[in-house]
Amino acid sequence: MYTQALNARDTTAPVAGPEEAARADRFQARIDAEERIEPNDWMPEAYRRTLTRQISQHAHSEIVGMLPEGNWITRAPTLKRKAALLAKVQDEAGHGLYLYSAAETLGTSREEMFDQLLAGRAKYSSIFNYPTLTWADIGAIGWLVDGAAIMNQIPLCRCSYGPYARAMVRVCKEESFHQRQGYEIMLTLCRGTPEQKAMAQDALNRWWWPCLMMFGPPDAESQHSDQSAKWKIKRFSNDELRQKFVDATVPQGQYLGLTFPDPDLAYDEAEGRWRYGTIDWEEFKQVLAGNGPCNRQRMKQRRDAHAAGAWVREAAMAHAAKRARRAEAAKAAALQQAA
Amino acid sequence: MAEQKIPLWEVFIRSRNGLAHKHVGSLHAVDATMALQAARDVYTRRGEGLSLWVVPSAAIVASDPADKDVMFEPTASKIYRHPTFYEVPDEVGHM
Ligand SMILES: [Fe+2]
Ligand SMILES: [Fe+2]
Ligand SMILES: [Fe+2]
Image (cartoon, rainbow over the protein chains, first blue to last red):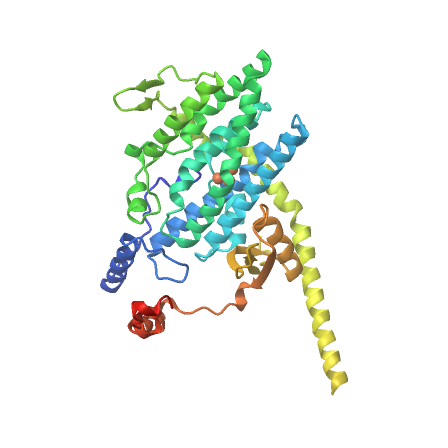
């Protein structure tokens, strides 16, 4: 999902002594009892590391995810659509902030996480490396990308780490507006002229497979999931979530009168679910490795924005320091006068 | 790039129904004015409340989770602190 790059085993775990093992047992017992772990509680280093990576990658995804949609704010077809898109993109900035705050409680500073992203050492979701070529892409993103995000984020509201779970509760409350506004854009296009409907179809054709990839590699190949499931960070496997998404989304697409770009897509009566064709995992690997259509552009935009904002951060710090100095001086003067 | 760290603030909101301010999250800001402004932008986009507090995170003193038992366990045995500990005959009615 937003943390696809986590599907590799953590090999840096230190060998634990007997005391450490006892603490780890107590920790696991708390998790098994559905207790929430809070920032100052003892936790295994690997738990801290895994969560820091997962939450910061999730945060990076929210922030980079503003770029493809931001691309259409000035060209939204109506004032209503523009206001809605602005509000949605603003929400995504907020999601990034909630998540960075949650990650910080694990001991990594915001500045460090920014550096990791800007230096290309941290990942973000593969989906945001695809271009938004037409207005219909904004509809497809809200409907499909936010729809997929919701599938992933709802179980995260029960994640064992308290600050992450609480951040997810806030995020989930806001996501449903995102998905509905996207679907409404698609619906409007599908009820419009043949050209508009074709535009919606084209967007679905381009976004469908990348959206299925959002859930990460198939279970058979993802080694990371066992430990995350044991720690109750991840409650459903990649394939389970992907299947839920397909089952929920296909009828919505049919209602729009659109077809999915998958000749193997078929309803399995016996199982009561939609079977889909083979995902191109080579494409996924390439996009994650930095070779997607927009990876370079996204990173450049983020770096430029960060660099362009440096003087604002510096000025704000200098202003705050000056005000603090003046307040001190005024206090000292008042004391002297009183004496 | 070694930029100066921007301080962390905790954000509290009082919802419209007159309840106490409740912790909703945190944010970074250089001073109180900007912390309030950012808290408004980030945490009150949908009518979440009518009053905001921002508190420097460094100003919060927290109990140590390791002291949890010493701090909170003794109350478990003090059942006489609860109204249900006391017998009042039914005839007396609701009390
Ligand atoms: Fe989001
Ligand atoms: Fe998201
Ligand atoms: Fe969203």
